Length: 260
Length: 260
Image 1 (tube, chains in turn purple, green):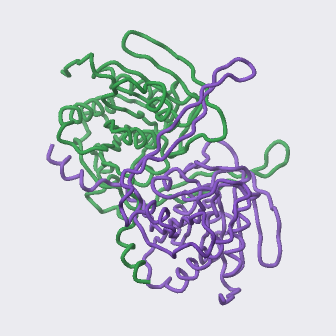
Image 2 (spheres, each protein chain N blue to C red; image 1 turned 135 degrees about the vertical axis):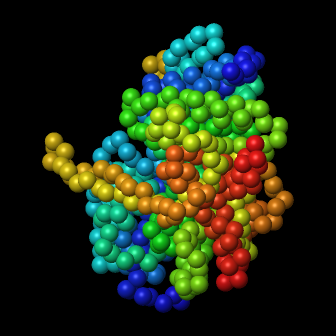
Image 3 (cartoon, rainbow over the protein chains, first blue to last red; image 1 turned 90 degrees about the horizontal axis):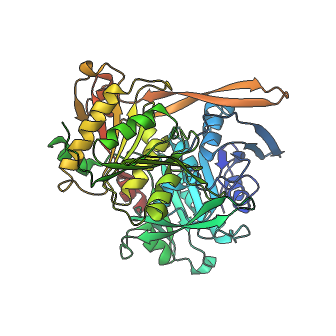
Protein backbone atom coordinates (compact mmCIF):
# COMPACT_ATOMS: atom_id res chain seq x y z
CA UNK A 1 0.00 0.00 0.00
CA UNK A 2 1.21 3.46 -0.85
CA UNK A 3 0.23 6.31 1.38
CA UNK A 4 -1.96 8.85 -0.40
CA UNK A 5 -0.71 12.38 0.16
CA UNK A 6 -3.19 14.54 -1.73
CA UNK A 7 -1.10 17.59 -1.10
CA UNK A 8 1.60 16.32 -3.45
CA UNK A 9 1.56 17.44 -7.07
CA UNK A 10 3.13 15.18 -9.69
CA UNK A 11 3.88 16.48 -13.18
CA UNK A 12 3.63 14.00 -16.05
CA UNK A 13 4.85 14.27 -19.63
CA UNK A 14 6.17 11.92 -22.31
CA UNK A 15 7.36 11.74 -25.90
CA UNK A 16 4.82 9.39 -27.48
CA UNK A 17 2.08 12.00 -27.11
CA UNK A 18 -0.85 12.33 -24.70
CA UNK A 19 -2.90 9.68 -26.53
CA UNK A 20 -0.44 6.81 -25.99
CA UNK A 21 -1.07 3.83 -23.72
CA UNK A 22 2.22 4.45 -21.90
CA UNK A 23 1.11 7.97 -20.99
CA UNK A 24 -2.01 6.57 -19.32
CA UNK A 25 0.28 4.15 -17.45
CA UNK A 26 2.42 7.07 -16.21
CA UNK A 27 -0.72 8.90 -15.04
CA UNK A 28 -1.72 5.71 -13.19
CA UNK A 29 1.65 5.62 -11.38
CA UNK A 30 1.60 9.36 -10.63
CA UNK A 31 -1.96 9.38 -9.28
CA UNK A 32 -0.92 6.93 -6.54
CA UNK A 33 1.22 9.70 -5.05
CA UNK A 34 -0.88 12.83 -5.41
CA UNK A 35 -2.69 15.23 -7.68
CA UNK A 36 -1.54 14.98 -11.29
CA UNK A 37 -0.98 17.78 -13.78
CA UNK A 38 0.24 16.82 -17.23
CA UNK A 39 1.43 18.59 -20.36
CA UNK A 40 2.31 16.11 -23.09
CA UNK A 41 3.10 16.52 -26.78
CA UNK A 42 0.13 16.65 -29.14
CA UNK A 43 1.97 14.43 -31.64
CA UNK A 44 4.45 11.54 -31.19
CA UNK A 45 7.94 12.93 -30.53
CA UNK A 46 10.13 9.83 -30.32
CA UNK A 47 13.80 10.56 -30.97
CA UNK A 48 13.36 14.29 -30.34
CA UNK A 49 16.15 14.35 -27.74
CA UNK A 50 16.56 17.71 -25.97
CA UNK A 51 15.09 19.55 -28.99
CA UNK A 52 13.30 22.85 -28.43
CA UNK A 53 10.97 24.71 -30.79
CA UNK A 54 12.48 28.07 -31.73
CA UNK A 55 10.91 28.85 -35.10
CA UNK A 56 7.22 28.17 -34.64
CA UNK A 57 4.46 28.97 -32.15
CA UNK A 58 3.13 26.44 -29.64
CA UNK A 59 -0.56 25.71 -29.14
CA UNK A 60 -2.01 24.40 -25.86
CA UNK A 61 -5.16 22.31 -25.55
CA UNK A 62 -6.97 21.07 -22.45
CA UNK A 63 -7.57 17.36 -23.01
CA UNK A 64 -9.37 16.37 -19.81
CA UNK A 65 -9.88 17.45 -16.21
CA UNK A 66 -11.03 15.51 -13.18
CA UNK A 67 -10.64 16.38 -9.52
CA UNK A 68 -7.21 14.79 -9.32
CA UNK A 69 -5.89 14.61 -12.91
CA UNK A 70 -5.63 17.47 -15.41
CA UNK A 71 -4.15 16.81 -18.84
CA UNK A 72 -3.05 19.32 -21.48
CA UNK A 73 -1.40 18.81 -24.85
CA UNK A 74 1.15 21.16 -26.42
CA UNK A 75 2.06 21.26 -30.11
CA UNK A 76 5.79 20.98 -29.38
CA UNK A 77 8.59 18.70 -28.21
CA UNK A 78 8.82 16.99 -24.80
CA UNK A 79 11.34 19.63 -23.63
CA UNK A 80 8.96 22.38 -24.82
CA UNK A 81 6.28 20.81 -22.59
CA UNK A 82 8.57 20.93 -19.55
CA UNK A 83 9.79 24.49 -20.17
CA UNK A 84 6.25 25.69 -20.84
CA UNK A 85 4.98 24.02 -17.67
CA UNK A 86 7.68 25.17 -15.25
CA UNK A 87 8.63 28.56 -16.71
CA UNK A 88 5.11 29.65 -17.56
CA UNK A 89 1.96 27.61 -17.04
CA UNK A 90 2.55 26.09 -13.58
CA UNK A 91 5.14 28.67 -12.63
CA UNK A 92 3.60 29.47 -9.26
CA UNK A 93 2.80 25.89 -8.26
CA UNK A 94 4.97 23.59 -6.21
CA UNK A 95 5.73 20.39 -8.11
CA UNK A 96 7.02 17.45 -6.07
CA UNK A 97 8.12 15.11 -8.84
CA UNK A 98 8.11 14.62 -12.60
CA UNK A 99 7.37 11.34 -14.35
CA UNK A 100 8.18 11.18 -18.06
CA UNK A 101 6.84 8.23 -20.02
CA UNK A 102 6.07 5.46 -19.81
CA UNK A 103 7.96 5.21 -23.08
CA UNK A 104 7.17 2.54 -25.65
CA UNK A 105 10.76 1.34 -26.27
CA UNK A 106 14.11 1.20 -24.50
CA UNK A 107 15.97 4.32 -23.42
CA UNK A 108 18.93 2.40 -22.01
CA UNK A 109 22.56 3.07 -22.98
CA UNK A 110 23.15 5.99 -25.38
CA UNK A 111 19.40 6.12 -26.12
CA UNK A 112 19.30 8.54 -23.19
CA UNK A 113 20.78 11.10 -25.60
CA UNK A 114 18.23 10.65 -28.44
CA UNK A 115 15.17 10.06 -26.31
CA UNK A 116 12.44 12.67 -26.00
CA UNK A 117 11.24 10.94 -22.84
CA UNK A 118 14.64 11.40 -21.23
CA UNK A 119 15.01 14.88 -22.78
CA UNK A 120 11.93 15.88 -20.78
CA UNK A 121 13.12 14.14 -17.59
CA UNK A 122 16.56 15.79 -17.87
CA UNK A 123 15.01 19.22 -18.51
CA UNK A 124 12.69 18.83 -15.54
CA UNK A 125 15.63 18.04 -13.24
CA UNK A 126 17.11 21.46 -14.15
CA UNK A 127 14.23 23.00 -12.18
CA UNK A 128 15.36 21.05 -9.08
CA UNK A 129 12.34 18.78 -9.41
CA UNK A 130 13.21 15.08 -8.91
CA UNK A 131 12.57 13.53 -12.31
CA UNK A 132 12.06 9.96 -13.37
CA UNK A 133 11.97 8.72 -16.96
CA UNK A 134 10.19 5.36 -17.29
CA UNK A 135 10.52 3.15 -20.38
CA UNK A 136 9.68 -0.42 -21.29
CA UNK A 137 11.54 -2.56 -23.82
CA UNK A 138 8.54 -2.90 -26.11
CA UNK A 139 7.70 -0.55 -29.00
CA UNK A 140 4.21 -1.95 -29.50
CA UNK A 141 1.45 0.66 -29.24
CA UNK A 142 -0.56 -1.89 -27.24
CA UNK A 143 2.34 -3.05 -25.02
CA UNK A 144 1.64 -4.50 -21.57
CA UNK A 145 2.48 -1.92 -18.86
CA UNK A 146 1.55 -3.99 -15.79
CA UNK A 147 5.10 -4.69 -14.60
CA UNK A 148 6.17 -1.15 -15.52
CA UNK A 149 3.38 0.36 -13.40
CA UNK A 150 4.38 -1.81 -10.44
CA UNK A 151 8.12 -1.11 -10.66
CA UNK A 152 7.53 2.54 -11.58
CA UNK A 153 5.44 2.90 -8.41
CA UNK A 154 8.13 1.21 -6.33
CA UNK A 155 10.88 3.51 -7.67
CA UNK A 156 8.81 6.69 -7.24
CA UNK A 157 8.07 5.60 -3.68
CA UNK A 158 11.78 5.02 -2.96
CA UNK A 159 12.68 8.44 -4.38
CA UNK A 160 9.97 10.28 -2.45
CA UNK A 161 10.86 8.52 0.81
CA UNK A 162 14.55 9.42 0.43
CA UNK A 163 14.10 12.82 -1.15
CA UNK A 164 15.98 14.68 1.58
CA UNK A 165 19.11 12.52 1.37
CA UNK A 166 19.39 12.47 -2.43
CA UNK A 167 21.43 15.13 -4.24
CA UNK A 168 19.81 17.49 -6.73
CA UNK A 169 19.47 17.73 -9.65
CA UNK A 170 18.11 14.18 -9.56
CA UNK A 171 17.18 12.45 -12.79
CA UNK A 172 16.70 8.70 -13.13
CA UNK A 173 16.60 6.75 -16.38
CA UNK A 174 14.49 3.67 -15.58
CA UNK A 175 14.11 0.85 -18.10
CA UNK A 176 11.87 -2.13 -17.50
CA UNK A 177 12.35 -5.47 -19.29
CA UNK A 178 9.51 -7.12 -21.20
CA UNK A 179 9.02 -9.98 -18.80
CA UNK A 180 6.03 -11.09 -16.77
CA UNK A 181 6.12 -9.21 -13.45
CA UNK A 182 7.01 -12.31 -11.44
CA UNK A 183 10.05 -13.06 -13.62
CA UNK A 184 11.67 -9.66 -13.10
CA UNK A 185 14.58 -10.10 -10.70
CA UNK A 186 14.35 -6.68 -9.03
CA UNK A 187 15.86 -3.20 -9.41
CA UNK A 188 19.54 -2.64 -10.24
CA UNK A 189 21.31 0.73 -10.15
CA UNK A 190 23.64 0.88 -13.16
CA UNK A 191 25.85 3.08 -15.31
CA UNK A 192 25.12 3.92 -18.95
CA UNK A 193 26.33 1.15 -21.28
CA UNK A 194 29.01 2.12 -23.84
CA UNK A 195 28.01 1.62 -27.45
CA UNK A 196 26.42 3.35 -30.41
CA UNK A 197 23.68 2.93 -32.97
CA UNK A 198 24.31 2.20 -36.62
CA UNK A 199 21.60 2.74 -39.15
CA UNK A 200 20.35 1.12 -42.30
CA UNK A 201 18.83 3.54 -44.77
CA UNK A 202 16.05 2.10 -46.92
CA UNK A 203 16.07 3.70 -50.36
CA UNK A 204 12.69 3.82 -52.07
CA UNK A 205 10.71 5.92 -54.54
CA UNK A 206 7.67 7.92 -53.49
CA UNK A 207 4.49 7.96 -55.65
CA UNK A 208 5.88 11.04 -57.45
CA UNK A 209 9.07 9.23 -58.47
CA UNK A 210 11.31 11.05 -55.99
CA UNK A 211 13.91 8.94 -54.15
CA UNK A 212 13.65 8.98 -50.38
CA UNK A 213 15.57 7.44 -47.50
CA UNK A 214 14.30 6.12 -44.18
CA UNK A 215 16.46 5.03 -41.29
CA UNK A 216 16.24 1.94 -39.14
CA UNK A 217 19.07 1.07 -36.82
CA UNK A 218 20.66 -1.48 -34.54
CA UNK A 219 22.51 -0.88 -31.27
CA UNK A 220 26.13 -2.02 -31.11
CA UNK A 221 26.91 -2.80 -27.44
CA UNK A 222 30.65 -2.25 -26.85
CA UNK A 223 30.63 -4.05 -23.51
CA UNK A 224 27.99 -6.80 -23.38
CA UNK A 225 29.78 -8.44 -20.42
CA UNK A 226 29.83 -5.35 -18.16
CA UNK A 227 27.70 -6.34 -15.17
CA UNK A 228 27.37 -2.75 -13.93
CA UNK A 229 25.90 -1.53 -17.25
CA UNK A 230 22.20 -0.97 -17.86
CA UNK A 231 22.04 -3.19 -20.97
CA UNK A 232 23.51 -6.09 -18.99
CA UNK A 233 20.98 -5.61 -16.18
CA UNK A 234 18.06 -5.59 -18.63
CA UNK A 235 19.31 -8.71 -20.42
CA UNK A 236 19.64 -10.39 -17.03
CA UNK A 237 16.01 -9.59 -16.18
CA UNK A 238 16.47 -6.59 -13.88
CA UNK A 239 14.83 -3.19 -13.96
CA UNK A 240 17.80 -0.89 -14.80
CA UNK A 241 18.07 2.52 -13.12
CA UNK A 242 20.79 4.97 -14.23
CA UNK A 243 21.14 8.33 -12.48
CA UNK A 244 21.70 10.99 -15.18
CA UNK A 245 23.70 14.24 -15.19
CA UNK A 246 24.56 16.62 -18.02
CA UNK A 247 28.16 17.73 -17.61
CA UNK A 248 29.42 16.37 -20.92
CA UNK A 249 33.01 17.53 -20.41
CA UNK A 250 35.53 14.80 -21.30
CA UNK A 251 37.71 15.44 -18.24
CA UNK A 252 40.17 12.70 -19.18
CA UNK A 253 40.90 14.55 -22.43
CA UNK A 254 41.11 18.02 -20.93
CA UNK A 255 44.58 17.62 -19.40
CA UNK A 256 45.97 16.11 -22.57
CA UNK A 257 44.57 18.95 -24.69
CA UNK A 258 46.02 21.58 -22.37
CA UNK A 259 49.49 20.14 -22.98
CA UNK A 260 49.30 20.29 -26.79
CA UNK B 1 50.70 28.57 -43.92
CA UNK B 2 48.80 25.30 -43.72
CA UNK B 3 50.08 22.33 -45.62
CA UNK B 4 47.60 21.18 -48.26
CA UNK B 5 47.12 17.43 -48.18
CA UNK B 6 44.67 16.76 -51.01
CA UNK B 7 44.33 13.15 -49.95
CA UNK B 8 42.46 14.21 -46.80
CA UNK B 9 38.66 14.23 -46.84
CA UNK B 10 36.84 16.57 -44.48
CA UNK B 11 33.12 16.16 -43.83
CA UNK B 12 31.12 19.31 -43.12
CA UNK B 13 27.63 19.72 -41.72
CA UNK B 14 25.76 22.24 -39.55
CA UNK B 15 22.37 23.07 -38.06
CA UNK B 16 21.57 26.42 -39.68
CA UNK B 17 21.16 24.75 -43.08
CA UNK B 18 23.36 24.62 -46.17
CA UNK B 19 22.41 28.16 -47.22
CA UNK B 20 23.77 29.89 -44.09
CA UNK B 21 26.81 32.15 -44.03
CA UNK B 22 28.37 30.09 -41.24
CA UNK B 23 28.20 26.96 -43.37
CA UNK B 24 30.21 28.69 -46.10
CA UNK B 25 32.72 29.68 -43.40
CA UNK B 26 33.03 26.03 -42.28
CA UNK B 27 33.60 24.96 -45.90
CA UNK B 28 36.32 27.65 -46.10
CA UNK B 29 38.07 26.21 -43.02
CA UNK B 30 37.69 22.60 -44.20
CA UNK B 31 38.96 23.27 -47.73
CA UNK B 32 42.29 24.41 -46.28
CA UNK B 33 42.90 20.82 -45.15
CA UNK B 34 41.63 18.68 -47.99
CA UNK B 35 38.77 17.71 -50.23
CA UNK B 36 35.38 18.61 -48.75
CA UNK B 37 32.18 16.58 -48.78
CA UNK B 38 29.18 18.08 -47.05
CA UNK B 39 25.65 17.00 -46.15
CA UNK B 40 23.77 19.77 -44.38
CA UNK B 41 20.12 20.22 -43.42
CA UNK B 42 17.83 21.66 -46.08
CA UNK B 43 16.10 23.85 -43.47
CA UNK B 44 17.37 25.60 -40.32
CA UNK B 45 17.61 23.12 -37.44
CA UNK B 46 18.72 25.23 -34.49
CA UNK B 47 17.85 23.67 -31.14
CA UNK B 48 17.35 20.22 -32.65
CA UNK B 49 19.81 18.60 -30.25
CA UNK B 50 20.52 14.90 -30.96
CA UNK B 51 17.09 14.52 -32.63
CA UNK B 52 16.64 11.89 -35.33
CA UNK B 53 13.84 11.55 -37.88
CA UNK B 54 11.94 8.32 -37.31
CA UNK B 55 8.50 9.03 -38.74
CA UNK B 56 9.14 10.63 -42.12
CA UNK B 57 11.29 10.00 -45.17
CA UNK B 58 14.44 11.97 -45.96
CA UNK B 59 15.14 13.59 -49.32
CA UNK B 60 18.66 14.29 -50.62
CA UNK B 61 19.60 17.05 -53.06
CA UNK B 62 22.95 17.84 -54.68
CA UNK B 63 23.50 21.56 -54.16
CA UNK B 64 26.87 22.09 -55.86
CA UNK B 65 29.97 20.24 -56.98
CA UNK B 66 33.45 21.49 -57.80
CA UNK B 67 36.68 19.52 -57.99
CA UNK B 68 37.33 19.92 -54.27
CA UNK B 69 33.96 20.70 -52.65
CA UNK B 70 30.72 18.72 -53.00
CA UNK B 71 27.63 19.86 -51.09
CA UNK B 72 24.36 18.00 -50.53
CA UNK B 73 21.30 18.92 -48.53
CA UNK B 74 19.11 16.47 -46.63
CA UNK B 75 15.54 17.15 -45.47
CA UNK B 76 16.31 16.10 -41.87
CA UNK B 77 18.11 17.00 -38.67
CA UNK B 78 21.87 17.53 -38.24
CA UNK B 79 22.19 14.03 -36.70
CA UNK B 80 20.24 12.58 -39.65
CA UNK B 81 22.85 14.17 -41.96
CA UNK B 82 25.71 12.52 -40.07
CA UNK B 83 24.06 9.10 -39.86
CA UNK B 84 23.06 9.24 -43.53
CA UNK B 85 26.60 10.24 -44.54
CA UNK B 86 28.54 7.69 -42.49
CA UNK B 87 26.14 4.75 -42.41
CA UNK B 88 25.03 5.04 -46.02
CA UNK B 89 26.11 7.70 -48.48
CA UNK B 90 29.88 7.91 -47.82
CA UNK B 91 30.03 4.52 -46.14
CA UNK B 92 33.01 3.29 -48.14
CA UNK B 93 35.02 6.51 -47.98
CA UNK B 94 37.65 7.36 -45.42
CA UNK B 95 36.80 10.61 -43.62
CA UNK B 96 39.62 12.33 -41.72
CA UNK B 97 37.66 14.91 -39.78
CA UNK B 98 34.22 16.44 -39.31
CA UNK B 99 33.52 20.15 -38.93
CA UNK B 100 30.02 21.10 -37.79
CA UNK B 101 29.06 24.76 -38.07
CA UNK B 102 30.05 27.44 -38.03
CA UNK B 103 27.00 28.03 -35.86
CA UNK B 104 25.35 31.43 -35.64
CA UNK B 105 25.11 31.63 -31.83
CA UNK B 106 26.83 30.26 -28.74
CA UNK B 107 26.95 26.56 -27.94
CA UNK B 108 28.85 27.02 -24.68
CA UNK B 109 27.71 25.62 -21.32
CA UNK B 110 24.54 23.46 -21.39
CA UNK B 111 23.81 24.67 -24.94
CA UNK B 112 25.89 21.65 -25.97
CA UNK B 113 22.82 19.58 -25.10
CA UNK B 114 20.25 21.55 -27.15
CA UNK B 115 22.47 22.38 -30.09
CA UNK B 116 21.99 20.73 -33.46
CA UNK B 117 25.54 21.78 -34.39
CA UNK B 118 26.92 19.88 -31.40
CA UNK B 119 24.41 17.04 -31.93
CA UNK B 120 26.03 16.47 -35.32
CA UNK B 121 29.59 16.79 -33.96
CA UNK B 122 28.83 14.35 -31.13
CA UNK B 123 27.19 11.87 -33.51
CA UNK B 124 30.16 12.06 -35.88
CA UNK B 125 32.58 11.26 -33.05
CA UNK B 126 30.68 7.97 -32.53
CA UNK B 127 32.12 6.85 -35.89
CA UNK B 128 35.66 7.41 -34.53
CA UNK B 129 36.02 10.48 -36.72
CA UNK B 130 37.59 13.45 -34.90
CA UNK B 131 34.80 16.02 -34.78
CA UNK B 132 34.85 19.72 -34.15
CA UNK B 133 31.81 21.90 -33.58
CA UNK B 134 32.49 25.59 -34.29
CA UNK B 135 30.20 28.39 -33.08
CA UNK B 136 30.38 32.16 -32.80
CA UNK B 137 28.61 34.26 -30.18
CA UNK B 138 26.52 36.13 -32.76
CA UNK B 139 23.06 35.03 -33.97
CA UNK B 140 23.01 37.51 -36.86
CA UNK B 141 22.49 35.85 -40.26
CA UNK B 142 25.16 38.21 -41.63
CA UNK B 143 27.62 37.77 -38.72
CA UNK B 144 31.35 38.33 -39.28
CA UNK B 145 33.17 34.96 -39.45
CA UNK B 146 36.72 36.26 -40.00
CA UNK B 147 38.05 35.49 -36.52
CA UNK B 148 36.11 32.20 -36.42
CA UNK B 149 37.69 31.06 -39.70
CA UNK B 150 41.16 31.90 -38.40
CA UNK B 151 40.74 30.21 -35.00
CA UNK B 152 38.80 27.32 -36.52
CA UNK B 153 41.69 26.71 -38.90
CA UNK B 154 44.19 26.85 -36.02
CA UNK B 155 42.22 24.32 -33.94
CA UNK B 156 41.69 21.92 -36.86
CA UNK B 157 45.42 22.14 -37.57
CA UNK B 158 46.26 21.35 -33.92
CA UNK B 159 43.91 18.37 -33.90
CA UNK B 160 45.19 16.93 -37.18
CA UNK B 161 48.85 17.36 -36.12
CA UNK B 162 48.19 15.53 -32.82
CA UNK B 163 45.69 13.02 -34.08
CA UNK B 164 47.73 10.00 -33.03
CA UNK B 165 48.16 11.09 -29.43
CA UNK B 166 44.54 12.13 -28.81
CA UNK B 167 42.01 9.62 -27.48
CA UNK B 168 38.94 8.66 -29.47
CA UNK B 169 36.07 9.38 -29.60
CA UNK B 170 37.22 13.00 -29.91
CA UNK B 171 34.65 15.77 -30.03
CA UNK B 172 35.44 19.42 -29.39
CA UNK B 173 32.92 22.16 -28.64
CA UNK B 174 34.62 25.36 -29.86
CA UNK B 175 33.05 28.76 -29.19
CA UNK B 176 34.52 31.98 -30.54
CA UNK B 177 33.78 35.37 -28.97
CA UNK B 178 32.46 38.26 -31.05
CA UNK B 179 35.61 40.34 -30.92
CA UNK B 180 37.88 41.67 -33.64
CA UNK B 181 40.48 38.98 -34.38
CA UNK B 182 43.33 40.97 -32.81
CA UNK B 183 41.47 41.38 -29.51
CA UNK B 184 40.95 37.64 -28.98
CA UNK B 185 43.37 36.48 -26.28
CA UNK B 186 43.95 32.96 -27.61
CA UNK B 187 42.55 29.47 -27.12
CA UNK B 188 41.57 28.09 -23.69
CA UNK B 189 40.64 24.45 -22.99
CA UNK B 190 37.72 24.48 -20.55
CA UNK B 191 35.03 22.45 -18.89
CA UNK B 192 31.29 22.93 -19.48
CA UNK B 193 29.88 25.75 -17.33
CA UNK B 194 27.17 24.79 -14.83
CA UNK B 195 23.85 26.57 -15.32
CA UNK B 196 20.51 26.30 -17.09
CA UNK B 197 18.20 28.26 -19.35
CA UNK B 198 14.93 29.77 -18.24
CA UNK B 199 12.36 30.80 -20.77
CA UNK B 200 9.84 33.54 -21.24
CA UNK B 201 6.76 32.49 -23.15
CA UNK B 202 5.13 35.23 -25.21
CA UNK B 203 1.37 34.76 -25.34
CA UNK B 204 -0.30 36.12 -28.47
CA UNK B 205 -3.27 35.50 -30.72
CA UNK B 206 -2.87 34.28 -34.29
CA UNK B 207 -4.96 35.81 -37.16
CA UNK B 208 -7.58 33.10 -36.53
CA UNK B 209 -8.00 34.08 -32.89
CA UNK B 210 -6.18 31.05 -31.48
CA UNK B 211 -3.81 31.69 -28.58
CA UNK B 212 -0.21 30.66 -29.17
CA UNK B 213 2.99 30.67 -27.13
CA UNK B 214 6.55 31.31 -28.27
CA UNK B 215 9.63 30.84 -26.15
CA UNK B 216 12.62 33.11 -25.67
CA UNK B 217 15.10 32.41 -22.92
CA UNK B 218 18.03 33.61 -20.87
CA UNK B 219 20.97 31.59 -19.55
CA UNK B 220 21.45 31.50 -15.79
CA UNK B 221 25.16 30.93 -15.11
CA UNK B 222 25.57 29.15 -11.76
CA UNK B 223 29.29 29.84 -11.54
CA UNK B 224 30.24 33.10 -13.30
CA UNK B 225 33.54 33.23 -11.39
CA UNK B 226 34.78 29.75 -12.42
CA UNK B 227 37.94 30.43 -14.43
CA UNK B 228 38.07 26.90 -15.87
CA UNK B 229 34.53 27.16 -17.33
CA UNK B 230 33.78 27.94 -20.97
CA UNK B 231 31.49 30.89 -20.22
CA UNK B 232 34.23 32.54 -18.16
CA UNK B 233 36.78 32.05 -20.95
CA UNK B 234 34.44 33.59 -23.54
CA UNK B 235 33.65 36.58 -21.31
CA UNK B 236 37.39 37.06 -20.81
CA UNK B 237 37.99 37.17 -24.57
CA UNK B 238 39.27 33.64 -25.19
CA UNK B 239 38.20 31.04 -27.71
CA UNK B 240 36.71 28.31 -25.46
CA UNK B 241 37.30 24.65 -26.32
CA UNK B 242 35.50 21.93 -24.33
CA UNK B 243 36.16 18.24 -25.09
CA UNK B 244 32.81 16.43 -25.09
CA UNK B 245 31.82 12.88 -24.10
CA UNK B 246 28.41 11.26 -23.71
CA UNK B 247 28.46 9.05 -20.64
CA UNK B 248 25.70 10.86 -18.75
CA UNK B 249 25.83 8.59 -15.69
CA UNK B 250 25.80 10.58 -12.44
CA UNK B 251 28.52 8.46 -10.82
CA UNK B 252 28.44 10.50 -7.60
CA UNK B 253 24.77 9.52 -7.14
CA UNK B 254 25.19 5.87 -8.08
CA UNK B 255 26.77 4.77 -4.79
CA UNK B 256 24.18 6.65 -2.75
CA UNK B 257 21.30 5.07 -4.71
CA UNK B 258 22.73 1.59 -4.30
CA UNK B 259 22.57 2.04 -0.51
CA UNK B 260 18.88 3.04 -0.40
